[in-house]
Length: 119
Image (cartoon, rainbow, N blue to C red; front, side, top):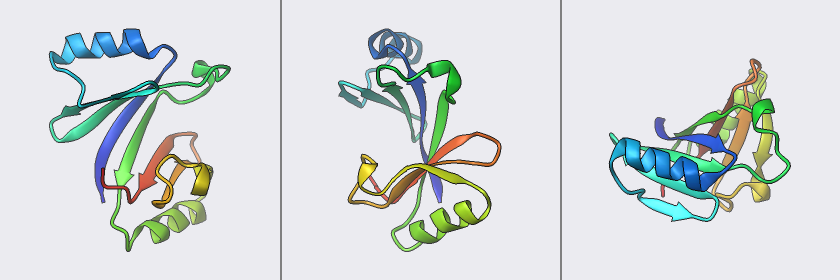
């Protein structure tokens, strides 16, 4: 398992992207209408624009993404659930589908994502 990505949830992507571009003094490695991503020290630092109507202050603003091998992802998701995590998003609803991935919330309210997508 490794930390592949950490991303911030933002209300307005364009100004957040400009701030991080200036702060990091580099261009994003990927940019899409709702997602931008910088490479920082071998880790992806992303910005995800929240959908309209989602209250930013009621959700966590930073989410680590843990990348797992194909042969361990299912066991890790199951273990997280056994330990009290709940799935917010998984299966066909997850953007990594058909790869196996889930956005989970630990018993303390912290969101994290696990995936076997290696992109």
